[in-house]
Amino acid sequence: MSEQREPELIVISDGTGETAVAAVRAAATQFLERFRVRTFGETRHESQVRRVMDRAAEDGALVVFTVVNESITRLIRELALEKGVPAVDLLGPLISALANHFKLSPQLRPGILHGFSEDYFRRIEAVEFAVRHDDGANLHTLFQADLVLAGVSRTSKTPLSMYLAQRGYKTGNVPIVPGIDPPRELLEIDRQKVVGLISDADSLLEIRRARIRQLRASPYLAYADPSAVHDELARARELFRSQGWRMVDVTGKAVEEAAARILEIHQEGQPA
Image 1: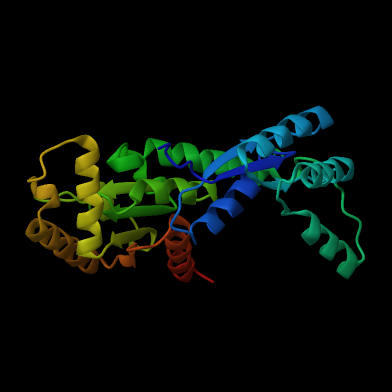
Image 2: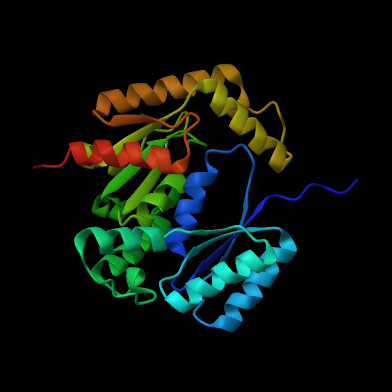
């Protein structure tokens, strides 16, 4: 019996595809199934569209597109109808609504969203910062961060750091390790920048046990011992409270959801 394939989503964009992929991943979090996402960026010619739509039809994929060129958009819709491929236009209806309601004329210029603007370079810098300051690295420059995430192992520190960096926030993360004092650099940072990540002990245990199975390590490690994990979380909470760091519970939350909460409390702490 053949293994069931993951549902496939194909993203077509005349730019980077980042906007569509972000929307697709946000929608996908509402399902238990895992989706396979393929991105075809810089799609601006009919020949490219035809190849991608042939592939979508062959794979039984759903197409999501962010294309502003009217002729390319029309071709995607025509081919979707012809080949029986479901296709979702993410930008078209919104652009039309803005134009109609405010009586404006859109530029309809491909790739304009991710042009080389100040915001673009800010996000690139933030991503580079997050990579350099992942998992407690380069602590001597951690003070330059906009946000610092602290937490015990497997509380989504790295995924959240990278997601926040994509939003333009220079984010570092520091692990809280049992039996080891937190680094001095972390304790000296402006407490408004630091967010402590916490989790339900049972959920954390499940995640850690899955990690152990993946690594084929001993299932009897303290890393996944219920008593040790409860104690580890309790000590982390005690540290966060003593330092005045605000906390975010990541239990059962998608990265986007946890990141939204982190940004919410971060902005609450900023001067008006």
